[in-house]
Length: 356
Image (tube, rainbow, N blue to C red; front, side):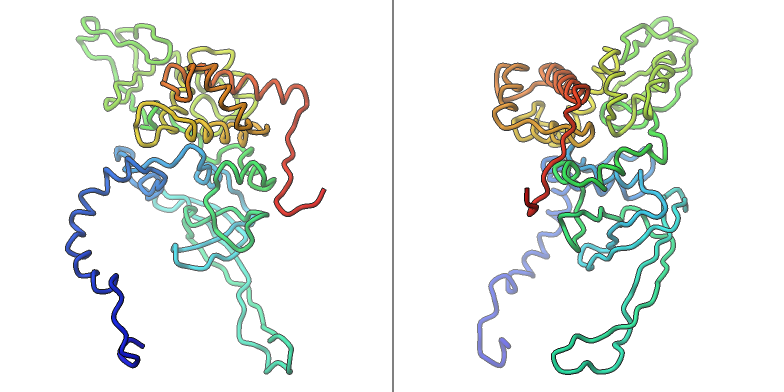
């Protein structure tokens, strides 16, 4: 239409060759932008090896990956191969493993050609066929939410709180047990004691006890994280997937409150994940995301704005939380949530658009 009507080409079209020249700069800046902005998580779900370091960390209120690891056969989900594709509702037939990645077989209804020409004012009548797809990566699945018809959304904690189906999936046991990790999510590797261990003994990061000279530990060299054999055993004894579980259940929360060492570890995990851009502190919006996640995991009502401000001031005296102040904030939040559950105050949020 630009040639036919004599219109000027838009400025953004004329600038595209210049943007292409800057592609190298974008590639150079991408790791820094990912670290600053967070929320992408591509490296976390792309099937990278164990030694790879994620270039981006999903926000703490993003429960999509946790939800995917709990999917089962017969679940209804939204499927989208690419971001530009229109999502469709599919039913999972089975879930398996292919080359180290979890994949699923799904089936769905697909309209075929219309049955004849419709009469005036009538809608066309389609024939439907059942289509099967195999080897579908689970990272292409999104929750079929009650409030978002026909859309494929990542599962934010705020949506999980209001959606009974999403919360029911999150409450299931994880299909694959989480392996021991440091507080930054790096997998720990076994390491046998060296001959010079008696000269430079290691200290367990969790219990802070000196590791025995002949003891096999699990470590993260990048973060200088050490896990002794005793703590590794105690982590596996905790309920609902153990200390390294990616979702906090009420039973696991009670176990953490009864174990100061693992409570400190879990608070550090939440702090690191909430501080996705590595600022070294949590402001009010980040603290809100933590509270939303805890509310979605434990099934309680999130704090109101004034309640959140009060909780921040009780923990740090300000509206920002250092890592040490977050320990108090996290412990208080878990204690408060469990008290509400034990008092029978289960929260059933009102769905948007519903009537009383």
